[in-house]
Length: 249
Image (cartoon, rainbow, N blue to C red; front, side, top):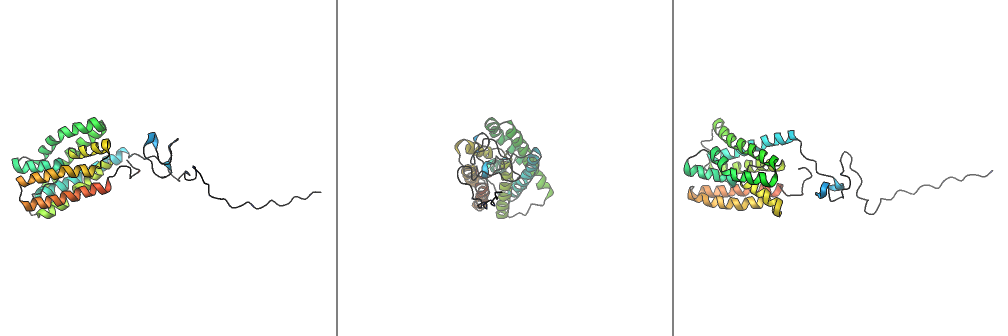
């Protein structure tokens, strides 16, 4: 009778090498068929292991719009109370309001109309609708904050810095959910989409013009505080809104 020799021990597994070595699935993550590790659906940039960006749900978009506009409106109220300005159409509306004595919400709506049309043309009806809602909420919310809070004694430096920071965070939330506060925000996003220039840099260039124009209606000290606030606002956008950095859209 022949005797069967025991099988030789199996050598320890060696990590795979080659093109497929880094393409193992990640637990709980979805993968787009045919996507490469660096490319997601339809050639869009993807994260590690070729994961496709997961869009926000409509509930998340609604909540984010409410949160973003709430913070931005509070920021505008602080800026207005301190006599400061900021960049974008919010700053332009404050500037015109100081000069003409008209309410912020009305000027904010009128100034934003052409930019709203541009955003709808370049980025679609969904973006336009969300931006229109955001414009209305920021304009109305700033009036509401002014009535609910005693802002009569807000120091200009505090109002400029804190107001700009709140407005920047609010704008960032809106940007991450395919919306904006209209105006130069929309222009900045369109330029970023078309030419790849970061939205924060575009916004900063527009803000410089607004801040310089503020010298015609505000003392140099308040304009200097406004410039610091505008720089802080744009720093928030430059550091946190870079195309291709995040998986979520």
